Image 1 (cartoon, each protein chain N blue to C red):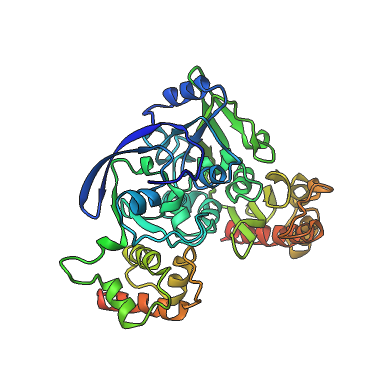
Image 2 (cartoon, each protein chain N blue to C red):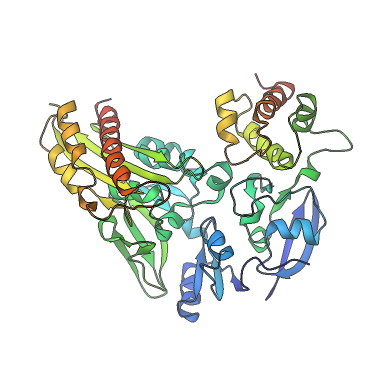
Length: 157
Length: 295
């Protein structure tokens, strides 16, 4: 039961035929080789697979690829532009916002959403915004510091 | 290539409610409607659901949007997401319990996709919106290819994951009255620490007159039993009285009395604990709704 879809990923349009049951996370990782998007729990709990779909942070393990037909998707590979790190990437590097790194792509994508909706979030708002992203290393302290730093270098108060 | 984490299915994304209903009829009960997908897809991964076909509602414009009705009430399309409910000035000003409940659902990512229609039609016993539907007296609009009808929230929730919707019906939207001067609503919940599902969630809508008398009260409870219920026995104690802390405490003691013998008992909480917490959260919901009604 193949389905045609047209999807723009990190600015590149793809026209594909995939089985309708293909998850967006599978399309990204297994079909398009964009393995920066990680799959942790596969039960929409951990948030490692978070990508932006038309600007909305989305757990790509809980969406069929066909649902994203006609949509613009941004993965962690699409954050940097022309070799320059995105402010959120710069901030995660600067504040050591990662330990093992597995949750990092999802954390950064969700953080992009948090700052897009609220350029100067409080610590409580950052923690609440990241509730759908789990860090098994429990490295939340520096992750939160990284998001705060990203807000500062992006011009939020 | 990819491995199948769900069984295969045919995918349809029609542009009208009529076509969606026709697809449901064509598959004779073996098709599932997809709204945000955040309950359905996990169920499909677990093979609790293995529909022959998925009918995705995302292209149906008639199911989207929030508007004010002629009589000043609210009309909310079934595909309205939690995020849209939380950020809607109209919803915040007219029916605060709706946005308050939506803000307590799961996490940012889930709230970007989960919808009010999906929540009600799925009727998860621990879903948040069903309690609000009961307290705010939602009128639930459903359409098939042949007819449209409106179902009162009092007759909508039938059992565990079971509603009054027919197999070929699409939930198109909900409407409710606005809370005006002297009325207020609230939703409070005891959330499971990991999943954020309601162990117990209580919504209350309270109206008081200029003399401080309670003129109307509705209380909806979720999480505690097999489906969202209305606690008429608690409401009865409130109506016609001044809502002193004593009166509220007495009403709260009757909160969830309708669920005697039916309280959920599972790994998350015992029946005794849920019964006790239902009373605690009923008291908090009434007090908060009353505070808003007075303000």
